[in-house]
Length: 547
Ligand code: NA7
Image 1 (cartoon, helix red, strand yellow):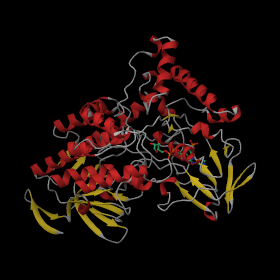
Image 2 (image 1 turned 30 degrees about the horizontal axis):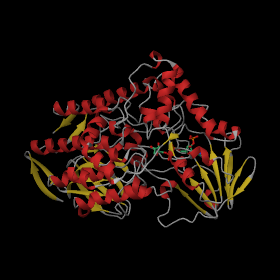
Image 3 (image 1 turned 120 degrees about the vertical axis):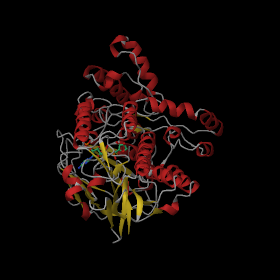
């Protein structure tokens, strides 16, 4: 670190002007933008490879729920013309290849440090820079700290006694081993039936000897309706990329799917059913996002639609007792994240697949040979924990982040996050969360949102450099306004009642109880969010103090 003078003030020159933490989709794009500008930047990745979600989640069945061609980066025409998405909903190995292809193509690897896990980040108020400590003992400083930590990158294990004593193989889906896992002839348990559990169960049901699913609460699932993309189809997609991305920028979720704008009660029941039957047969989130808007806000409309889905489950699952267990009774369709499935319900028609309802017979403990419920003991070779994540704030909590006056971020956020635009935090200067809690990107088809946030952050940094500023910080008032706005948005959607990570619930994390909402997600829709942050930038970053 060397001494320098900025605007007549004596200051220290940091090791790097910018450090990005995390090299998943978000970190890669931010790195690309800064390298393109010739900025002194390094990106620290805690893992042994880049890709974030697509590096870690190697469990069978892991794939996009977003249409592949809406998930890829939009910033490079050349990249768009080169890459062939082979499936409408691309699987993890292909997605990891894509991420590496992008990093290779734009020569980003030389700016990335792998196995560089950040342990602490402390703001140095005297010199307006961040001091980072890595787990390997290294220290680094930067003027601006950009976090690209991922939304679901801190997996949580259930708090069940005895897990460490199990003698077979066991892992959280996030940590599915890199080397092949032999499933043939094995007795396998899966705990958890969220989007991940549903993918893994569907994929392995016909590969294992016995599969036992431990379900605490069922989810409302809908068909993915995946299909291959031929070379000809890919050419057609390439020809319309501009329209596709424009459309995504105009819809609340950043997908091509847009709500049916007819009023639920203005059309007949027959017309509603006709729409739902069509959507059930179509690919992706259409069944959720191209539905009537009342599904998200009106209990009665939601209940009628939920019954339509329940009937589909009943018709697909042969055993009526099992079918009823797979139908959620405590919440309506789409109030929690909808898992998209491929023959998930049919898996329960197989003789080797068994469903254990944990509401009837809770797990007592994991034993050296399997799982014991209040009713019986089961033997397993493999236990798969598909038990979810400490969503959004978990990755921040894992790092000892300290801002002005030594305040710890995890203390500030103990009751839930408060932010300005989901991008900055009062008391934590010179830090931008590229995909933070309360940002629009976190509630959309992820890359569509992050491209906007990264572009916003890049322009902000350019503004700082152009004006010779070395410090930026959200005001407490701006943060309070935004956080109240985010909280108010929750009141408008049925999702506020969800017992899911959308409301910050996680039974495996202290303080994340049900009913104590943590306002993690911005529910105002992508277009509104994007126009808000653009307006803030247009008013020379009103809400931030720049000096
Ligand atoms: P989710 O959606 O949080 O699902 C976790 C699942 O694990 C859910 O079914 C939980 O039941 C279950 N769970 C959690 N803890 C336990 C314990 N202790 N015992 C039994 N069952 C438990 O995580 P996913 O990984 O499936 O999906 C995360 C996101 O990835 C998803 O939203 C997509 O965006 C992609 P519960 O419902 O809490 O009763």
